[in-house]
Amino acid sequence: MSDENPAPVTPERPDAPFHTSGTDHITVWGSNEEDTLAFYRDLLGMPLVLRQPNLDDPSQTHLFFDTGDDRILTVFVSDDRASARGQRVSTGAVHHLCFSVEPDEYEDIMAALEEAGKGYNVFDRGIFHSIYTQDNNGLVIELSADKYEIPDGRKGEVLATAQRLREEDGADFAQDRHMEAALEELGIPVNKHDLPDADAGVGV
View 1 (tube, one colour):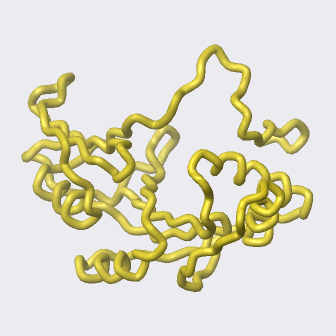
View 2 (tube, rainbow, N blue to C red):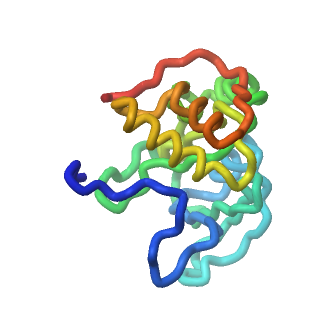
């Protein structure tokens, strides 16, 4: 990305012919139903809310999971596909999926992943705290908790303010001090969640 004329970072809607109103669902290619249910329903706790044929290819099954906030994750599965390790890494591929979790459940989540034999990494990303693991097909799954209490509907505003403050500070990425200053500037109480210490895991 050019440093000469960077795209502005702002919570304001751009001048576009139309605007999306939210994320309805994300669909990924899955393996078989049994392994998919074991990970997304039985480990991550997402209810299976709909099962029907893939309308573009009825030989496959289309599973719908509620991720916890009425946003839906759907997976195309087929019983003749075994779960695999690794994923395609190239332009247009999915890097990872991130799901929100409650900060006070962090320790329980790590214990559950260990019990299920799932490896994971924990990072303090400055603006949030993340656990990274993999699903049954090697797709990276991030479980993210906000480090600070942010009122509903104001996250974009807070992040854009933290972005401006970190640029003014000359920092490479947003850190606690930028988040706290952003909340204070916007008149939002600074309430930090109790999360485990972790490295940033950054490459900058």
